[in-house]
Length: 276
Ligand code: ATR
Image (cartoon, rainbow, N blue to C red):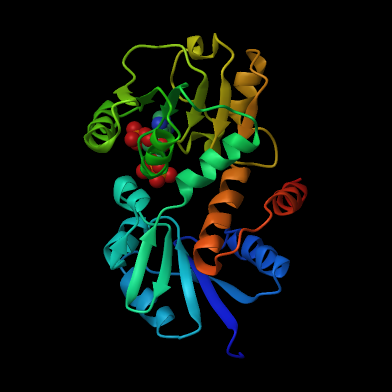
């Protein structure tokens, strides 16, 4: 590799399914950047070792981190961005002269995709279904987008309560975060559970769809997810899956590494066509 060739990767377990190499290669092409982007499998308890080994190569500019290593990456980073600190998870490591910055671009990816789909978050009321890593990662960005209220619903209610309490410790007092014990009316519903991967629906009343909210599912498949299809059958017509979130979180990582803003539209279009 010549001096201005770069190396990056995504760490995960499993990792075979990752589309990040395709996305980042397409971004790099837009700027004639020579970037090799690898998939790296790490053992469940082997993140640090894998990361140390990868980063020993001076051409490495940074890395993405997916399940189940976002907590390990938080520990690995020397400093944290506000998003990473508040999300309690790192999906992007950026190499600096004296260590690594840990950032989290998942929330940026979600909020940007919502905006690209003309969904106005300012002063809106949001229902977030799920309280696992995927939900936790996006709450700070939703708060920063100045939503009025976030209700969090989860099968294990205690996890929703914990996430609300954790968020309210740092959130501005213009956004209130509650555990969704009562059904409210919503402008936007986000499914941050893994249920769509099993073609299942969250156990929550259809009343949530009464106001025809915009509906977002962080999962994407080669067809509308069960959740989006269900919302559509109840009359919601703004139903969006998580492919755009994936591309936009990658775009923000790329920007953090190279200080260049890639055009996401052709990449999203390409991935959508590939899925079909
Ligand atoms: P992730 O990091 O992708 O969010 P996770 O931490 O395992 O993964 O969380 C998965 C989310 O999907 C959780 O909110 C989980 O609910 P619990 O906290 O009650 O486990 C939710 N989920 C997964 N399977 C579910 C099911 N069969 N019914 C309801 N919720 C489910």
